Image 1 (cartoon, one colour):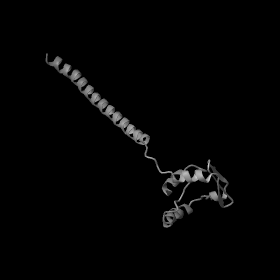
Image 2: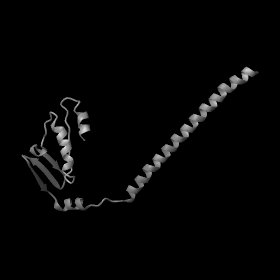
Image 3: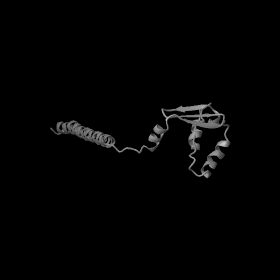
Image 4: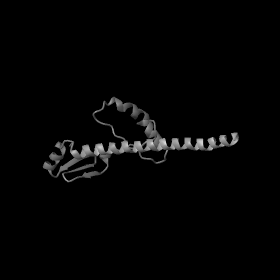
Length: 137
C-alpha cells in the first residue's frame, strides 16, 4: 500500500486515498503509518468533512466528527440487507455465454496463427524452391 502511495506522490499536490478494514488486526496498520509519518503529508479525517450519501431507503451524513443515518424506509432497507445473491438462470447463462465467446475467440486466434505460419511456409517454399529449380536447370 505504501509503495503505491509513494508512486502517486511523484505528482505535486496529488491526493491519495486509503481505507483500513476494521476487521484486520491493528498491528497491520502500524508499519504503513510509520512509513507515511516520515513524509510531508496532510491527513484528512472524512468525519470532519461534510459527506452525504442518499438512497431510496437511507441517508447517511457525516459532519463535525459525527455520523448520522436517517432510515427513510425500514422495510426496504431490511429487504435489501437480507437479499441473498441470486443465482438465476440469467446469471448462469451470461457466465456460460461469456466463457463460450472467450473459447471461440481463442479458437479463431489459434486458426489465424496456424494459417499465418502455413502461409509463411508456403511462401518460403515457393520463393526458395523456384530459385533452387532455376539454378539447377
